[in-house]
Length: 360
Image (cartoon, rainbow, N blue to C red; front, side):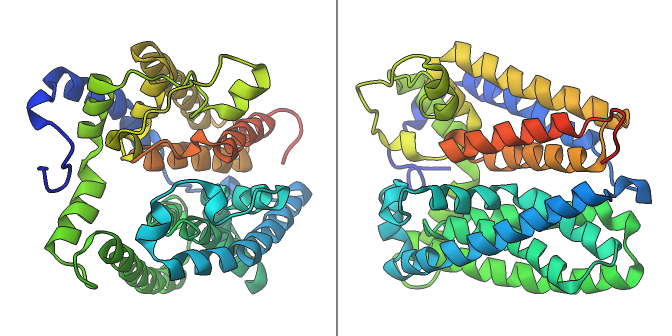
């Protein structure tokens, strides 16, 4: 990492303590993934009328999101990635309406779509249902394309690969071979899209040159600890939760939005979810909010290992957990109102599908 990638960063002021703190706070979330194991028994698959209703609901949502968002994604990509990304306001491309909220809400459950996609394969459901579940995963890609972003391609690929990991013991050998071929083709196409957007945004030419590779890929994957250092070293504006938990803060009327807006370069670069939690009120919010998420995830994983949840509860939890962790290694993607709603709905779903007397 150097000045070519982070021209505004002062490498001489980096703190070893902050690098250690950064690692110590992120490591427990990554370690938790080691406790999650594949589904090895057919009982791990949901069934029944409630599951059928949820499939139908998600299918309609996926179809609506694709139809609604695709024109905006095409318009965004036709302008150019760099042009759209100069401003991060949704109003540039997407209109502010209840339809937009619904259309961008369903794609956030792309992990649930991926998991249910594999369930439909194992249960030998109709091809239309399988396609609609895949469209649910694809809708997240289209959603991110409305901002000419690369994240959707990357995160949805993770969802399908992790879904394969969890359901692989229940898949037939012939199905595994077919899926692997599809993965190879899909990943190849995904790389083509990522390289294209990266070249347009960061390269000095129309193809991916050395500058584009260095800034657009190396920086994309490695800038986070340095940006975390910048936040701690230079930030003097705290948002009191308005930039990370806006829906919750507004609902309870907690605090006031800051008058001064910090528009320094590091504020719009990737610094993991830690920078968002630090931006609330400093070290106190960083430690408390990080611990809060860790405790929730850790306690749910313990209950899952004790077989205390029905399959759908496990799927919604895993969707929440992996979306938080994977996207959070770049930035806190759940900080807007839609992301807040996703978290609340996920927590509610996990609660509802905890094992009681009624089977789901």
